[in-house]
Image (cartoon, rainbow, N blue to C red; front, side, top):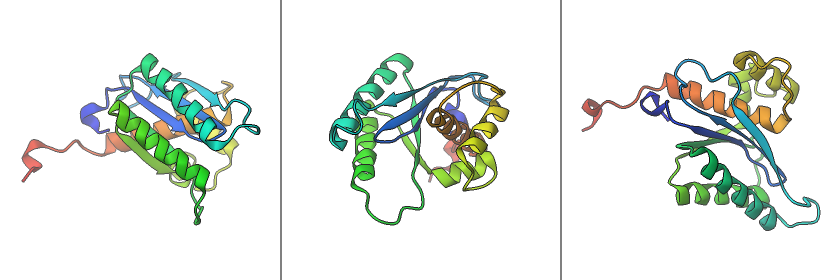
Length: 176
């Protein structure tokens, strides 16, 4: 998302196989994000009793409903960072999100959790409380009660929109 389409709706996710935080950022979003973006958590049914494929399928169904309700133009999500070995559940989640975005024609922007935490809270290993407070301050949401997954999703959205504002849209003159 660039300044050329910064007026479009963004769905930000803190995607997980058990719980996924989501936040919706609606226009106008040029210099500041609106004061109270819609957010929530998608929880897997019986997370300990269901397999990963069932949990991911449930997530995708819930994301379909969010698309129907909010009509986003792009999706941004955080990826776990610091994991240097294959994690099948996370790989399945990544593939499902990518396929879901392709099916809906939505660009998918992925950022590492450390990248987001560093930009929003000032350090890559900021705690959940530090990140939540930093987001509260930026959005003027001090005292608002949200889950850690919602704060993570809000942080991803703020980070993505900040990058979009700082990255100029390509000019038609820049094309070869």
